Length: 180
Image 1 (cartoon, helix red, strand yellow):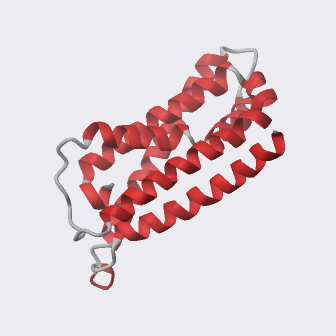
Image 2 (tube, rainbow, N blue to C red):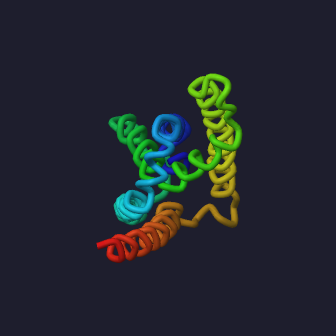
């Protein structure tokens, strides 16, 4: 989004991602034991849904790749960017697994679990946001170099998201078939 729509839309996508991370933190905090018992059933479905969403994003990037790469108008993209970041984050089961593994290792049950989880969550969201900003800025700079200026970022993104989406669909779909 930083390359395609500029920094404001990329920031909104980042906020959507952070909101998705909040959902993962809340789920991990409230229902850790339940999620562990339901993980075998739920995670393949989340992988399948996340993979389908990435394939959808891949198709959108492919469609966009037919146009000349330039910073495009952002009108009407605010909510879409926010939802894109949120859905991409929430549909990623690896983030949920991370928090389910992370929180029990650092939370002391003798103290307020919700406060500790919120504190670790805020720290994680800050560090995650910082890494995404650095990644987006680095990528935007990369595509400004003379050697890569004519490279089609939308097509490259479509290929990458499509490959990851396909792998997630195959992995999640295979596990869903095994369950049923």
